Length: 221
Image (cartoon, rainbow, N blue to C red; front, side, top):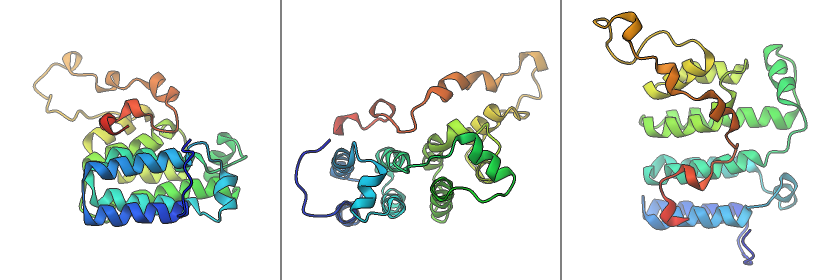
C-alpha cells in the first residue's frame, strides 16, 4: 500500500492520468502512473471506496477510456480493472448468482453490478476499432467463469471475435468442433487437438486479480 498523502481523490487521480494519457499517448510513464494508482488503492476494500464517495464503476470506465486509446497500456490497464472489480463486495455465492441469471430472478445489487460492469466494458471497447489483443486480455477477466451457465457468459461467448479467444471459450465450454487451421487433408486421428493446449486446472486456479508476473511491462513494476 502507498503511504503517501494525496490531495486528489482516487477518481481525480485517474482523471489526471487520463489527461496525461491523452497528451502523451502510449508512453512508458503512463504505465508507471497506472502502477502508482494500483499501489495507492492496494489494500482498499469496498467500504473504503464507499466512504470516500467513489463509485468503482466510474473508475472502471475511466481506465477503459485510457486503454482504448493507449494500446501500450492494455496489460496494465486491464490489470487495474481486475483489481477494481475484485473490490466489489458481494455476499451471494457464485452458484446463487448463476442460478439467478438462468431463472431470470432478481439478484443482489452488488453481484448484478459486477456482471453488468463486465458486459459494459466489453460493449464499450467494441465500439472502437477492433483490437484483438485487447479482446484476449479482456477474456482474462472472465476466463474462470466461461464454463458456467449465465446470461453474461452466453452474451460474451456469442460476441467474441478473436480466433484465440473463441478457441479458449469453446475448449473450456466443451464445444470445440472446428480447427482454426485447414486440416481437411490430414487424417482425423492425426489432426491437432486444440483443446489439449488449454489447461483448465490452471485456469481454475487463476487469481481474480491479474498478477505482475502475467504482464510484459515488468520494467515499470
